[in-house]
Image 1 (tube, rainbow, N blue to C red):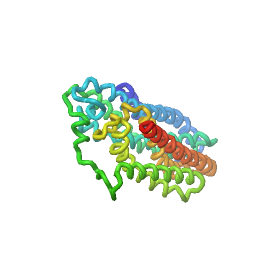
Image 2: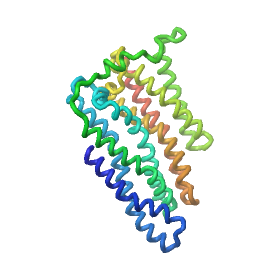
Image 3: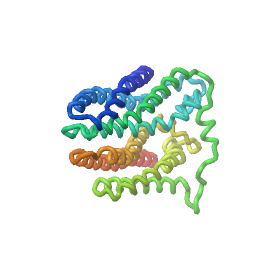
Image 4: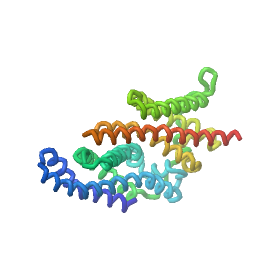
Length: 318
């Protein structure tokens, strides 16, 4: 993690000046100047590919590395305890690990659209987006460096003495029906609706914003369902609600989370490609085809993720 963080930050800064020069000069450049800028672009393009690939690979590696540190932290039983060893930095940066890969993936998808065109119609947009991302890339790498250089084996409190003693966000019964059953049914209903809207968006763009709205609604519903239903049920610990314990002890839960994450971020990658990936007729056609594949992928990923959850729940009954 330390080596990857240093490498990513160094490479990101290495090509920053080139990216700025290409972005600033491209629009006003004549044919000869554009030819020279294009030669610089290919080097910058390759390095950015590597940097973003490192940062995407570092996300699962970050959580896996933190998990391996559990035995070294007194009082830790899962990732919750490791995060409490450096709480301000670890907890405040947790959302970065889920949000920033959306932007990284968006750049790589735009690059893929550019590769499908004979010329480089998205050259300036790619460099401009990288200039926006570069501070975030460096900050992301620096956070990893600070976390892994400052983590110490201090005594911590773990999830059992934290999340389990919080007041539960849902009542035991709602209109005489167990709230956990209602929440689980809501999760499945929203998931299937979103899967349908995602697939429909690959056919007609009119469904795209309803699908994005549904993706936002699914985020809190998924979090609540995981902590209040899936964790206590699948782990057979009715009073335990830590999602990190579920992810560690039930490997299929990690696959479900990965599928759900991809499904929920795909609509926003589509929004990015629609805004920056349509420059000429060739790129418009490539962007439309790519966006359609993303919407279909979002639908399939959600169905697969929900299927994993359903299998885990059915296994409890059987």
